[in-house]
Image 1: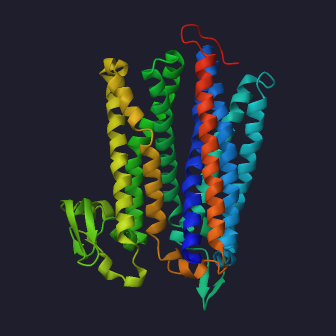
Image 2 (image 1 turned 180 degrees about the vertical axis):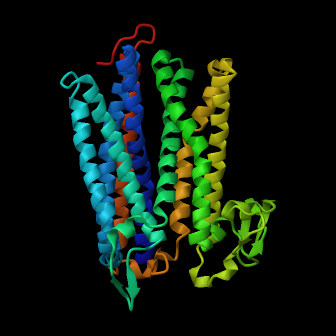
Image 3 (image 1 turned 90 degrees about the vertical axis):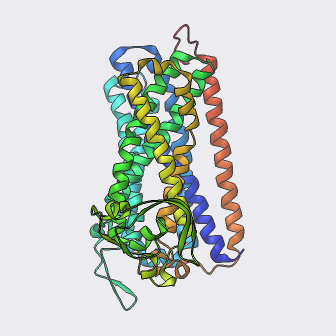
Length: 442
């Protein structure tokens, strides 16, 4: 394995793990706070039990997210020193603010974990809200830094030098809002369906039904609302990408030739040699409308761009199709759930509806990983679009393949530990809670 490939694989592998830990850590505090709010309002012990069970999950993912995020910060300096040397002073502000948000989150989480029966009950609940808000802000700030790589701004690039740096303009670049919105909604979708699916599985198995019913409803409402909002945020992102990164849009859709009234491609196998897509379903003019709002607008094809500047078509296209495909399946589940709440109340007691949520447990995370792949691979061959190529930013350090194996082992170990801790937590709920007598968790 050459050093360039090892560096890219290590970064991809690290981000692939961290994005899951981070998204769960961003969203779970909100679930926890809703359950806590219901307990404060209703005094029903079951909501206290759900709150305390989810609190342990929040603590687990906060710790693992902190570890995986710290590793990533080391990797940026270790693997991409040229990138950090030039880009660090420009987009360092969101990273610095993210550190501040992280410390606020840590302090608030400490208050929440150890504040039971010590603080005013509403102040204690509010510390949990702060955990959620600060975690969400951390995610937004990190995504803003990544958005700068897709839409670099806040500096003048003259003769290889970065001059007239404006950190605020760099942070609030043209891509930060659409990317942050899409990412935050995706975090709620993926985490919500995963949590709801786990509780649905426990209901199907007849374990602690009262407890898991309450937990399922909270997670399912978050998941289904977010799933219905995601296509709207996706539309905002698509129009933004079409304007700023037309080559990425072309790769996402395997759109090889510039044309007006361009068709939207669903599925298909891209043939980069013949510059066509085989076995695809094409919906006339829909790509033009999605990209610009005009059915007859022109959409640039990949042939408009130099070969050296074109993103990898196959990976980008397949990842985009996977993201959209699973996203639409979750939208369908969400619509069925809303229909059950509104008109078909008997469906809520049917096993098939719960089985749909169980089947959706991995869907959100698969879509999340696929969407991140589109964002990163679709920017290639640039690490800073139009300014610095990825090949020019990697470290020349020999033996980096060993670093890749080491960090891979760290992340695999983290994933195993988290899985074991969560399994232990779920089984403990089964032992400590009797669905026929609502006893609080110890």
